[in-house]
Length: 156
Image (cartoon, rainbow, N blue to C red; front, top):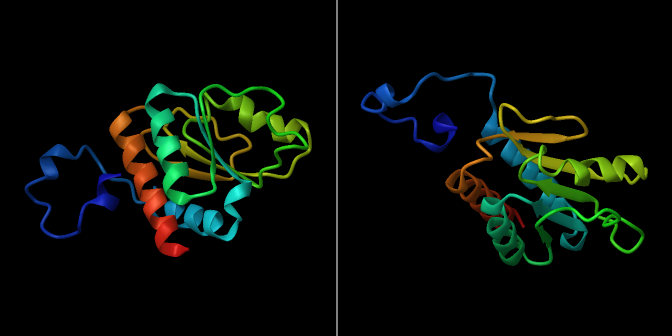
């Protein structure tokens, strides 16, 4: 993540703090892809969910600032994606803790696009867009939801 959020200017002073860099991790490109998807879909059909304590407030703030997006802060209640609530896009903070909300649309044959913030230990089954990030720390979750919200607002 550090190579995408830090300018590419003189980084020689910070090199001792960076363990290693990987060229194949494309966090910025995945964020831009997610923003394109969120911006093209009507906000009333977008749900953002987090059951982790650090992500619940961030999800609510994301929904507030993007306007019209539904936020589910807390655990998933089975039957949420029924005839009454048919989302086209689901954004989850952690695919491990939100595994029920990822499995439910697939089991009910509901076509839904799933965007997830994935850590190195995350399961990516049924996730369409994976954004590689640290999804355990409150500062990194807040940073990525802020980035996502600001990029969506700029795009739309």
